[in-house]
Length: 208
Image 1 (cartoon, rainbow, N blue to C red):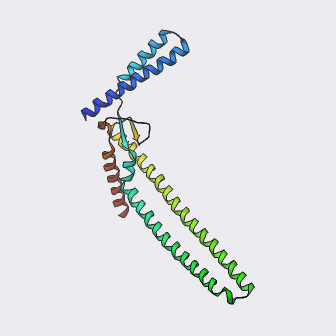
Image 2 (tube, rainbow, N blue to C red; image 1 turned 120 degrees about the horizontal axis):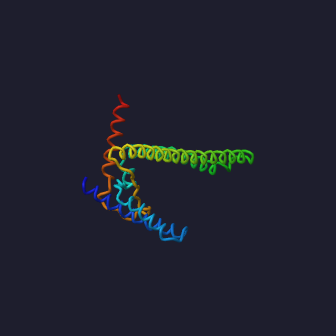
């Protein structure tokens, strides 16, 4: 834990020096006097020695390894398979009905043919609507899952930060705002273990 504390102190100093540069530039533009820059430097120097306790997590890993997410994702996937099977069955039934009509249309009157065509068109529209409804339901399920997951992760992160006395937990994602950080600041595995433990305890409690 001492190495992690040393690392965050070093990071705090870096942030402090960046603060010096930023404040100095603003002060020079506004006042055009060296005294303003000196005052800003003194203020920033105080910040640079503050022990900023910072950590980060690999957000994608936390979500993908969260037991709640894995369970619900599998449920949605299974639901998608059922929907696909139901839709396929209805589609095959409709195709068979169209094929039967094509074979028997010659023995029908014009009015009978027109009535059957209208019936088939109506069934086709209903089939398309049914497909769209299934897709919307799955999309809604996925959106709710991600919303629930982010809410649960946010709640756990707040508790984790308080427990570990952290002032900031950053989200580390590919292409995100963080390009580099020392591995000592990575608490991803600890968070995954903790959030899964909390979820497991909640599941056990709900069953009782």
